[in-house]
Image 1 (cartoon, rainbow, N blue to C red):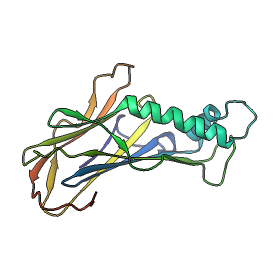
Image 2 (cartoon, rainbow, N blue to C red):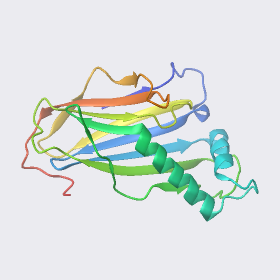
Image 3 (tube, rainbow, N blue to C red):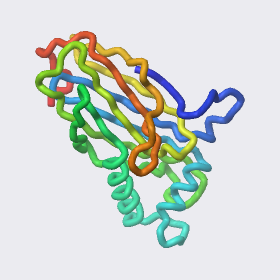
Length: 195
C-alpha cells in the first residue's frame, strides 16, 4: 500500500532514533487480518523497559510483562480503529500479543519487539469501490517510521488512496496514522485466509 513516516525526511539521521512500525494488512472475502510489529531500538527500548519495571528492581518479571501487555492491549483497543465503507468494525484478537525482549530480559538499552495480531469480519456486501481504513494512534508521541504492506486473496485488488498520512487527534490527543485503500477488483468466490 505505502510506506510513510510520521516525521520529516530522514536524511542524515540515525534509524536508531525511531520506533519502526511494520503494518501488514491481508484482505480476504471473509476477514481482514492485521499484523503490526513495533521494533524498538536500544535507547527507546530502555525507556519502555523502565515503564515495564514497576517495582524498579532492574528486572522485568513475568507479572510485569503481563501487566505491560494488558496496558498495551487496552491502549490498542482505544487507539486502533478499522472502518469499511465508513462503518467501524470490531477488531478481534487473532493471537496473543507478543513482547519479545530478545536475549535481554532486564532494564537495559537493548532492542525489543512488540507484535499485535487482530482481524475484522468483511461485510457481506463489500464490492468494487469499497474502502478499508485502518487508523492507529499507538506510539504517536514517539519518533516513528511506518511501513505498510497489503496482501489480498486471488481475484481481489486494492490501491492506496491519496489520503494516507496523519489525521486529527483522537479523543485522548493521539495523532492517528491512516492506512486507506480502495477496492478495484473483487471476486467473492475467493477466500485466501480461509477463516
